[in-house]
Every structure is written in structure tokens, then in C-alpha cells.
Length: 160
Image (cartoon, rainbow, N blue to C red; front, side, top):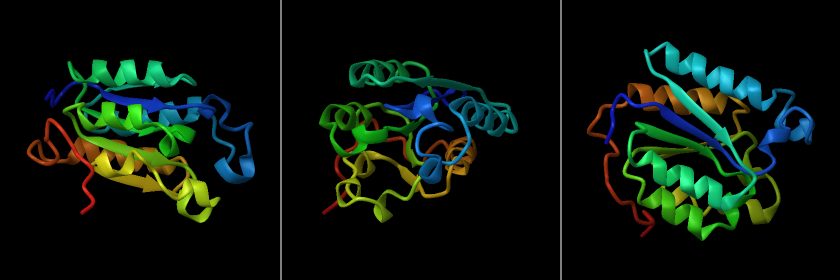
């Protein structure tokens, strides 16, 4: 695992519309604001962020595969893929670096279908409902965590 490589911040479908899509749910911050927040948080620890967004599941999976060879951690807001993508979950389960799942809204307080994330059981941590500040929390945790925590090369569903 790379301990000094960039933190990969991935945003899934529709997150390119932040600030314009359902501001009553997601707030007024744009994706550019989120990226700036993540970069600022990482810079405080002398670290860098590689931020990307795609509306396409396969592209996100390809980026997760790339993270195996140089990223020090992954922050991911899978958007709607959280609830539907076994393929995304499987890619994250074998990425070999710490993973933090982020949701701007509290997915557990919304529609019933959003209550279950396929990604959560293979993530080292989950932040939801804190608005875009959840990204800062995720990046800072990855920057502060001891190298020996969460270094599993393959994660399974952690539920009994």
C-alpha cells in the first residue's frame, strides 16, 4: 500500500450537478467546492488529492483498479450506485487501500431503498449526513490514520 500517494476522491453519478440538483437535500456547494475542500484538508497534512467524477459505473471501477498501484486511500461517494452496484462493491473490496464511503445526505433518513448501501460493508468507514463536510472528515481520517489500520488487501462483507 502506498502511504504517501494521493488520496483518490471519487464521485459517482449526478454529483457533477451539486449545487444545482436538489439543493434542499444536497446544499449549495458545487463539486468544485468539494474538490477544493478535500485538497485543502489534505494539504494541511502535506498530502495530495486526485479528484474524479463519472456518471459511468465502469469508469469508476477502472479508477478503483488504478488506485491499487499508488493511491494511499479512497474516498468515494458512489451516489445511486451505493444501492445497486455489486461490481463497484467488489472492486472496492479488493482495492488494498483504506476506503471511506461518503454521502452528503443522511441516506438512512431518506427513501427506504437508500437505507442499504452495498459499499458500506467493505468500507473502513462511512460518513453520511454531514453535508460536504463529510468529505473533509474522510480525507482527514485517511491522513491521520496509522499505517497499520485498515491495511487489509481484501475486504469481505464484515457483517456476521
